Length: 154
Image (cartoon, rainbow, N blue to C red; front, top):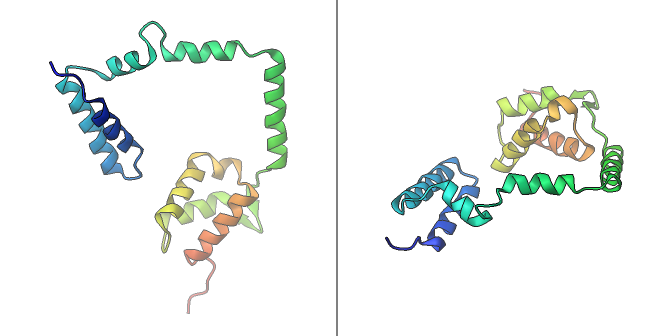
C-alpha cells in the first residue's frame, strides 16, 4: 500500500477552520475518505501524532496535578483581578442585554457576517445571562444603530 500523502491531509484538515459550514463539512468528508483509502482511522492518526503509550488526556491531567498551591492561588487571584477590571453589566442606559441580543439575532438587517458572528459568540458565551463588558456594549450599541433599532419610522 502506498504511503499516506501527509501534505494533502494537512491541507484538507486545515480547511476545517473555515468560516463556511459547507467547506468544513466537505473538508471533513475528504479527510475521512483519504484516511479510509489508506485503511486508517482518526484514532490511528492521533495515536501516531501523540504516541500510543501516552494518550493526550492523561498528559493534560498530569500537568494540572503538578501545579503547586502557590501557582493555583496566583491564577485564582489573577482571574479575580481580571473580573474586577472588566465588570459585566446586564443592562446599560436602560437597554437590556438579553433583549438586545435576541432582537439583533432575529432581525439582522444590514449586519455583516462579522457582526452576526460577534452576536452569536456573545450569546454562546452567556452574554445575555452573565452581562456584557463595556467594550461589548459599545459594539452592541453600534450594531443596533446599524440594524436601524431606535430609529423612528416615518
